[in-house]
Length: 474
Image 1: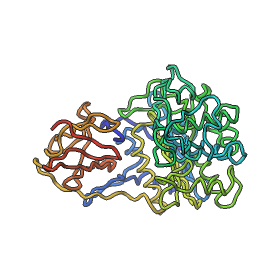
Image 2: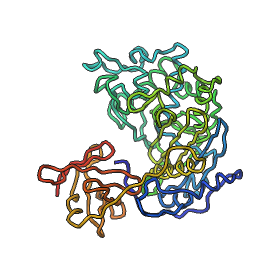
Image 3: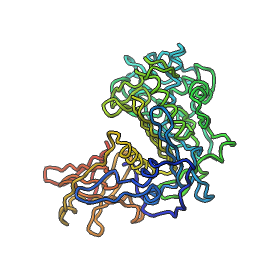
Image 4: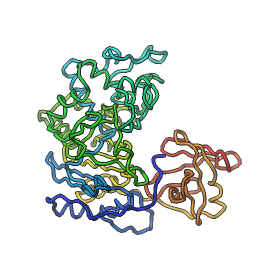
């Protein structure tokens, strides 16, 4: 389960606009539509600020590149609500997991220089710590390639970060289990299957630093950030004090600021990049230029290998989508949500960053509006059919369910409708509609609950986003 919606609004002042706008931007700003639409129900286009208020997102920053050049970049709303600091194109956001594909560029650059072999046992390069060998690593080894494409079989999918006044471990402390996550180990045969692992990315971070003999942020500065002139970006953690005034405050689902304004991520390669959408675009444009035959950070052969989809369409860093024509990655840190998408042919790059845990649905709508305006294929809204349920039909779904990695939730009937309730206040529950007799979905984001029945025809479990919810009480 990806979220729990908090349905109350913040008061927003007018958007903080940049002086350079054109008709394209003006049209896009007023053309947002829901990503999920109900068949037969007419929808009305909304403005970015209206949807920011709807989703309770204080600030958004957008950059669009076309044919290798920055077409436009603009900030909306607040970097900090209390001080009414506006988002501008220079506001820094945490890139979260977008840190991974950009870190991958440095790893592959080191491989081109002969400092590492991406198909060698990672323990060949680890000197400050070692990844424990066990029965599943006897025949197949953890390698940089497998860490980049998430087939290494390593544990710990993501990281919560640390409060700024907490005792913060270094990367070795993180992978050793001395922080707020478990230690990193290999739990299944490397190369056999896909499992997203920020823990594995952190192992790679340590290996690269051990080989280079320098802090990871320095590797990134020398190999990626400086060559690409990503002057607003840094992997330094904690964020240097001289950059604090540029940093967006992170906001939780309920609209409250994250304690201390943001979390610290010693897992730099996995989640530690501070940047702007414009700088993310520079990374993607460099890849596009290399594919077009121009000189870039990496050689053409390396970039082609990077963008070759493996299991779950994962490349060596970026995800590869739309039949291999696009590369992308999203990010989700405490109070930040972001996404970038780029075409391999160089036609476009779009990068969107928000300072809210609710930002994912908003950036999806902005991306959809951009694609529709420029008539780029893909990202059309999803049309969902619905059916009416009787009181008896609704009662068959209700009850408590224990959901993997989430915990106990309830499906309840309120005011003649079904809701998912995680046990908080009434306004924290979110609506479910029926697609058919055994499928419910969230009309806000399309999240689908597919129910399974026992021999007596009673619903006993559901699947949602790869997770299983098992009924524990009727």
